Image 1 (cartoon, helix red, strand yellow):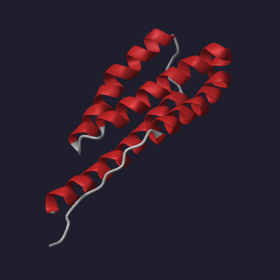
Image 2 (cartoon, rainbow, N blue to C red):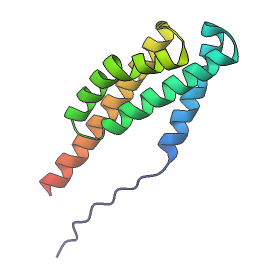
Image 3 (cartoon, rainbow, N blue to C red):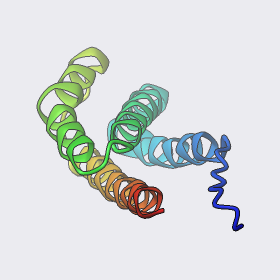
Length: 119
């Protein structure tokens, strides 16, 4: 008799990467928006947007599309109004990066789902 077990390991390295990337975007924001306030505004914006899109992208196909629409039309404008910064190329870069990462997460979880269903 064969053993059909699927082992999935989840660790916190994704959160560490998200913080590191947010710090990188924050350093760019320091020069784009000027000073420590720009750093903190972009750090908060990038961390929230990247985390939101990645978490919602775990839902195969539909989660990725829904998270992009929600982030673009609701989440980013709310964050920009709270932080007092304006939309620049840096916000577009953060959003584009989050979309690419979200697509990667969606494809990965879709493949895992197909693998589990096929067994």
